[in-house]
Length: 374
Image 1 (cartoon, rainbow, N blue to C red):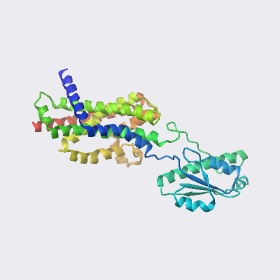
Image 2 (image 1 turned 120 degrees about the vertical axis):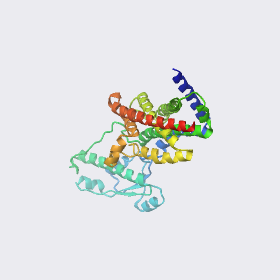
Image 3 (image 1 turned 90 degrees about the vertical axis):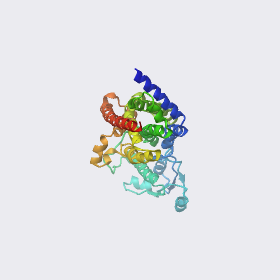
């Protein structure tokens, strides 16, 4: 009981130390509020209010249907221009796309011919150009298939594949990027907070004060883990409920409390990694270098930024043993697909086992660093 009281009081000291560090406080608040919002709204990969013009030389019912298929919010209302204005409009960055519908287009379709449509693209915005081209091709293809079916004409494709998305049916980028920003920030902020807490004790000279007290290395370490973990869980809950669901209007499919429970288990691994790096590094610049070499690649390869399946098989096997990979998979299963404990429990077990193993190694390293300081 005395040990628990000691760990609790040391944890309060950690929270007070963090409260007196305005830079870290600003970093935490920004990472789970403004950072999440900017990742969702400022770095979109989907189409939104893209400018498009139409050269309609057919002026038929079918051409009107094709123009109507390009509607907001993906596109601005299409502007009709003449054929001679195309080059000037694209060169002047007035429009990103110009669709040309040739004369007698509907008549040729009714006659069973395959007339061509022309799409001129300003490819200076490469991502928008690629995504927009596919979107326009699919939208126009659906309209043409619908028109041909109404006339009883033979389809070019005997099978029309229809995709239905269980989560994010409109493929809105903000729904994915906002949640993934939170998941990535959990790892990075936990490692930074715990590692900085260890280095701060050494740089401020408060480690000597702790060594003069009847405290064990385990008590000192556990205090840093629960105090910084509590801060992370609190800001994650705030970010999910207020920023993601409230401000961004992103529907969370699963249970947020279940996700927070999985986060608590994962924090043992992330905290242990931060403390381990904090004992290896002798200063904050060295800690920053270790962070770049270890934590950033781990985040990139955990399946949040790039699919795990696209990596080499040897790397897949290595990353499958890293708790950050299991955490990303667990978070996506709960928040995106509404998975319950019966589905994610193997990932929770893996996170716990590897996390406790690293926690034990970090505790041993921390104990040796304490002994050396005595």
